[in-house]
Amino acid sequence: MQAIIQYPDFDPEVFSFSLFGMELALRWYALAYIAALLLGWWLVARLMRSNSLWPAGKAPMTPAQVEELLTWVVVGVILGGRLGFVLFYKPGHYLQNPQEILMLWHGGMAFHGGLLGVTTALILYCRKHGLALLSVADALAVATPWGLFFGRLANFVNAELWGRPADLPWAMVFPTDPLGLARHPSQLYEAALEGLVLGVVLLWLVYRRGWLKVPGRSVGTFVLGYGLARFCVEYFRQADAQFITPDNLIGFVIHAGGIGVTMGQLLSLPMVVFGIVLIVIARRRV
Image (cartoon, rainbow, N blue to C red; front, side):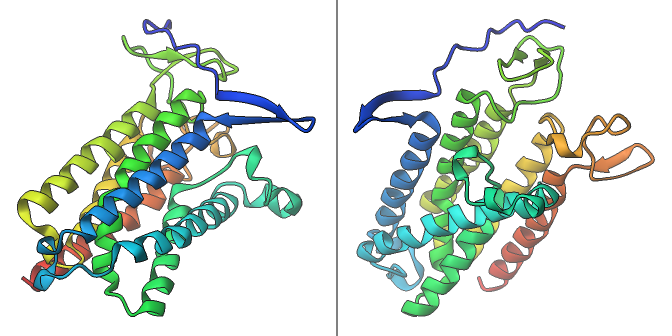
């Protein structure tokens, strides 16, 4: 099996320099997080300036509050993403090596954990300031796909989270793959579905269909859309090494009779259900 498209020779560092004897570097992954947060901040603040998009012609928060909320979101992403990875993917390892939990520079973040962290931060912030939770969540939902888009592109640049072996014209051999197999560039599939497609759909619904006027409808669409996109891409994405055994090369965490689900699919199923519930409840309010 041979890749037809050559994997680009990316340098994971944008630039590096020495300061007081220390080697410092800006990596593409960090730049993706910065770009995602800044774009999300800008987009949410823009939505808050457009009162006509919201119920009763009034945005649920001010642009100044968006800046304060950004700090809460950053903390939620980091704590939730890291703890999610620790609990969902490598609980045994971190139970034996608890000192590594705080070593973020070694990698290891889980989107589902980050989502729970952001949700917790959002609930606490809205309660503190008496804001309409669902409307604020709707605004964050519109911005989130673009952060996912940058994040998945960074995964591709880092040659991580690659896909399963494939015999396709666009398959690639990733330099980090010890087996040197041609694989699905599943990071690009996720960037397209979870980021670009979902982001464009939400912007169209907000600006052309007025979905922010009904609280909960936009965040329900995001949660449902992400859950479906992630569930589908899991068929092409290589499962985490800890779930693969000689008898289970696909990496199913639950399987019977040749049918199974991966950890990513298992965590996405509740999102699909929750997204549908939110949309149904919102429609009843129309």
